[in-house]
Length: 174
Image (cartoon, rainbow, N blue to C red):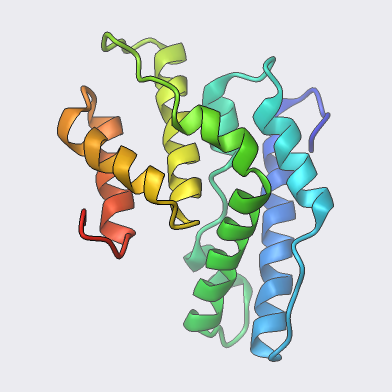
């Protein structure tokens, strides 16, 4: 996943890796056990996140994982609470492992002027992903950033990202 030259193959490998880990966590949760987040997984996603030769739009897409509904379809007699717990664990674990790489993306200044070109869209997309992942760690600086963005953002993408994070937070800013 981390080093394939074909972007679709990279994306598909990332999806399969995430799904495999989510299924393993689901099994652990339903059996009453625990599962450590593998360093190899965070390392693979770190490589994608820090590779400057990869377009920002694609990097953002690499961090959009199969949905809870998709996982439920893959499991016989799915337990929604265990599925949700698995997804929360996955996101928090990956965000924690990649905090150092995600923070500069989340806290970089927004583009001054609105632009609809693909590069600007990609910058907004990867920044939104970074903010969302860091917010899963209940970082007060991210909540403050989102509160400010909700009031001052110049694009719908930025406003929606900020509002989505605030809606999920258990803070007065919500």
